[in-house]
Amino acid sequence: MNFENPGAQAGVLQPRSDPAVVREGHDRPPSGGKSPLVSKAGADPLRALGRVLVWAFVTFNLLVFAFLILSSFKTTTDIFSAPWGIPSSLHLANWENAWNESGFARATLNTAGLALGASVCTLAVSAPAAYVLSRIRTRSAGPLSVFFALGLGIPAQVTVIPLFEMMSRVDLVNSLLGLFIIYTATHVPFTVFLLTGFMRTLPREIEEAAAIDGASPFRSFWQVMLPLARSGLITVLILNIISMWNETLLGIVFLQAVDKYTVSLALLNFLSSMQFSGADYGGLFAGVCILVLPMLALYLWLWRRIIEGITLGAGK
Amino acid sequence: MTLATPPAGEPRRWRGSPRSTGAFDRSRRRLFLPFVVPALVLYLAFVIGPTLAALWISFHRWDGISEMRWNGLGNYSALFGDPTFLTALVNTLIILVVAGAAIFAISFVLTMIVREMRGRSFIRSVLFFPHIVSAIVLSIVWGFIFEHNGTVNTILSKMFGAEPIPWLNSDNLFSMILIGTVWISTGLYVTIILAAVDRIPRYFYEDALLAGANAYQRLRFVTLPLSWDVISVAAIFWTISSLKIFEFIYAFGGTTNDLPPPAVWNSALFVYGESFGGRSPSYLFGYASASAILMLVLFTVLIVVLRRLLRRDSIEF
Image 1 (cartoon, helix red, strand yellow):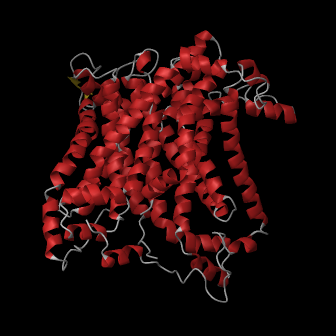
Image 2 (cartoon, rainbow over the protein chains, first blue to last red; image 1 turned 90 degrees about the vertical axis):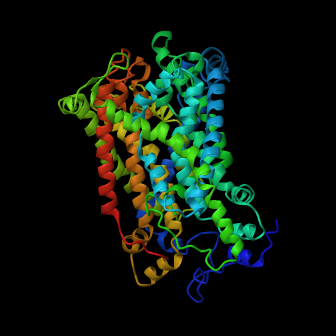
Image 3 (spheres, one colour; image 1 turned 120 degrees about the vertical axis):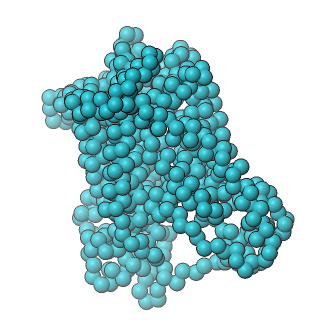
């Protein structure tokens, strides 16, 4: 295919100058996104107070996460006697216990498989639907998009009882496969919704060029649209992975056997077992870290995309 | 965004293009059904179908095992005489309104401050972070910080010699849950509002400044009107997500191997508590479904009203 159609590219890639940003005589040139209002406003004591509050909030969040990680290396006595101290020695026993004896190894495997598999399946089902809903104008495309968006407003507590009944009839209760199907299906509305919005913003010209070059619509979807929409696809994939990794309500209803638990269920199980086996807060925080750290890693790696995806949902 | 502006049929842009795109468009229409049907089937079978089934179940007495028995509107009228449900209803609405107002007020103030700060993208990503952490973890941390011999009481007693404050006793627990909800949600709305505010061209602010507008006037006449679209969507988004809150409250049951006290239940906990949850589940499927449907209807009405209230002519810029 030949995409080097100058007419099509002109619309997409034409460099735009924004004359409004710098006006002669009035403004300093923009410097690294810093507003020219800063210097004026900086003296305002209210604003200074505001900054202190923002930093306090930021510090609080950072301390909380430092606390989680530090505590996972401490003994329970250490956690209570010096909650903010550096652990006296790396108490790796917490992690060993959580990983081997409290079933977190199995749970991590279960959750990772569920979240990765189901989010990929959701995407595979939703991307084609979003493509035709955003690109083909039939009478039903608009109402169908709205119909999919309605699904965003239906909370799991409404559907959980009928779903349980449905799945128990086909013997898919207490089964990871059953939860896999449910996760895949319940994330379809959000995924279709986000991708339809995203694909609407993509330029049509490249697809037009592909059409002129004789590409079939399917090929145009596969070889033009999907690569174009790559960033949106990855974003929604990650958002779904995060949502499935942390999901709890459907998990506690559908999974009963300990060897099928997801990480959040293993953590809740650990929490309630402390009633009998004594307070092992070190182990608890090791479990907490097993639930948090994969998402933290994903976030550190892809935070820009995650934040873009969230704002994409709310913006235009 | 679809919730904000239902997709109107854009004018066809193919008109006047070469014939090949017309043929392309026609043959693309044949993709419509095969591409849409798999997603639609999953959606109908696992979201819409179960919602309608919940409506049907809500008119029955049913424990999931024995025959369903028709109960008409009996479940619904029983709900209004059930103090546990009324508490859950009020709690859900308090979370929606009180926590929501706090979240939006704080987010707006933070956005206004953060947008002019150095290191704003670092600040934003730290504030946002709780949103991607499991609410169970946040709940455990929140409980740990405010426990009887937890962090806050330790600090208070070391600094001021204060007696430990019972933050998490039955009188205070729901307030602490509210504050915790504000803590975990604020970063998300700061992020959303910040993105909207960033799209406003700077020259509007400069003009306002030249005209002598103070900070409040800039907020009132520039920021608010020009980010209104996103704010109204965010408000609807909060309404939807506030109904879904479950884990953060659930994990306050803590080490008791049971649900948290009914005084802090919201709608989701009520449904779970009346069906599968607790040490000895009650399996009142009809009753639980009735409460879920009632809340869904209530929130649908709220969203419709909210959309009407928040509707402004959108400003193009």
